[in-house]
Length: 204
Image (cartoon, rainbow, N blue to C red; front, side, top):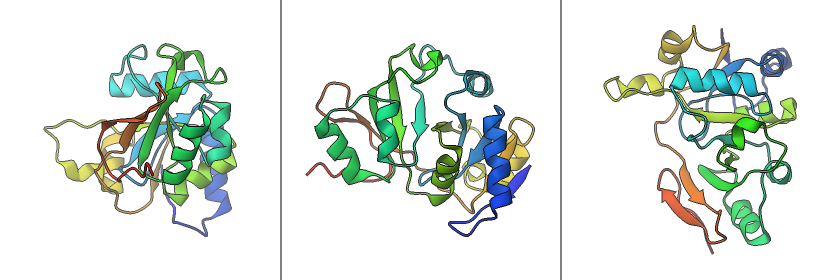
């Protein structure tokens, strides 16, 4: 199923349908401020395991990331000091993934690496879904084979053709990008960019 959403003024019925699918353990594909992503309710382990199977991920080795609606929810799922909080507040919402020690409210599947990536994308669609879900969304890039045409990563219709049978809802938020987020490791107190993607980190 594909649902068309916009930056604002979306049908509450459509939003309710998406939230219900997530609460029921479903999987969605959605736009972010970087590329389209695949995700689920971050506090439900079974759909996370399902995504791992779709992408061929090893849960014990993969860094899981979650999307939060705003900064107020981060401390529930990750541990951060004042300096890291201020750094994140300056740069979020934005195309950054901050790697932090995982909190104890996340499912056991996150505890394999004891760390979690935190995202607050500059995208009103997925953030509004997060707000109405009242929970974080586990997020990862949609599967991509280097031999494939990169165009399907940005076109919701092509995404639906390729993954329509693997997920429960595809959110058409218009043409997407194909840049990845910049990953900022904050585990040791000093932030370190481990992958430069979209966006320039403001460290001042």
